[in-house]
Image 1 (cartoon, rainbow, N blue to C red):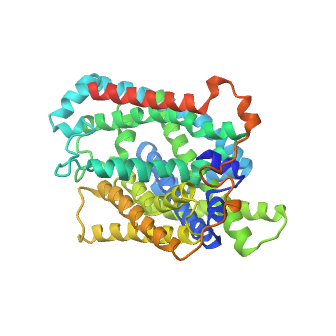
Image 2: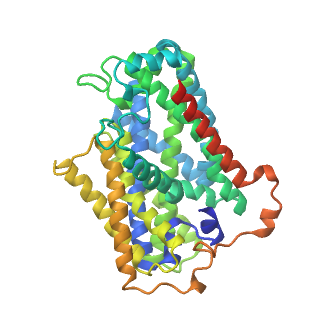
Length: 448
């Protein structure tokens, strides 16, 4: 996707949709994104504060406010650059905290083989990724249709390609090749991190009595509880720092992207256009402060969920999937009408939200909350696609002269920069390598 973003020289995902479709598509996308950003920032802030409460005994409300002010300070002092550099350094701190936890958890559970053997007594679903995923199965994660098309395509692919918190990092790259490498290089540590999260979480089922049951700890506290129970004081300090670093990085990413979209896509285009750069810089700083304080409020919304992973997936099904729909259709279909992106996002968002609402009211039935997010994403994507097809019949497509750099076949590449890239920095080679690494991890876990 990066040749379309970087080659067209847009500053945000909404700006791409403005050039590909029309102003109303751009405006509704920007509004959807700023709403999603502050809600997701609240999730990271709540998770950060929950760690402080669980391990240090700091009251949740106090932890939320103090954590928010700390994140605000380094965003204001350093801007996007500080957020990016902090995320890189925080990754190593996160690993330093998670690696000892994985080792201790596996030792207590009897190794990876012992962990899987003990969990298999509770049913094969605990140790197999695909057990019970048939249409008549009972796996609470979902069935194969929702996993492949809902989770893998609509939610995951949409997140990696259109979530501005991720795309913004690639847009700040020095050239086209560096922009393309940004998500690919990120895929290597991303393949390792789940092992540091999933394995301790599986071990917690055995090692933390009553986890997820009435009167016991919620699933959100699984890893902090393991750390508190098994890690010595010094290592515990490093582990706490790692968790705090992870959630601070997530919140900083969402606040900085909220700042960019509100300032340049909404304020500059629709509220106060034509002002000098110094004016928009001040607006950006005020927006950052406002975004952090709104995140404090949304953190209390996230605190009402016993499993924040389900809450995050619900938000992605509402907001990310319709944006991804407009982007992917506009990128591959040159004849998509000017107004089709607007209707695709509106219908997709409303249908996804309606599916969730009917599920909560008991009208629709799914295997679990997580399964609902996957089917909600599929239904929302399909409904939005139909809306785009209908809208295209009533709105003319843009001429090809206005689509240069925006659609497949007309993308622009920096030929000179690409010619200077050595073979070992090829996005294609590194992308294939990342896929092989993921496949090897999957095969290893499946064999064990």
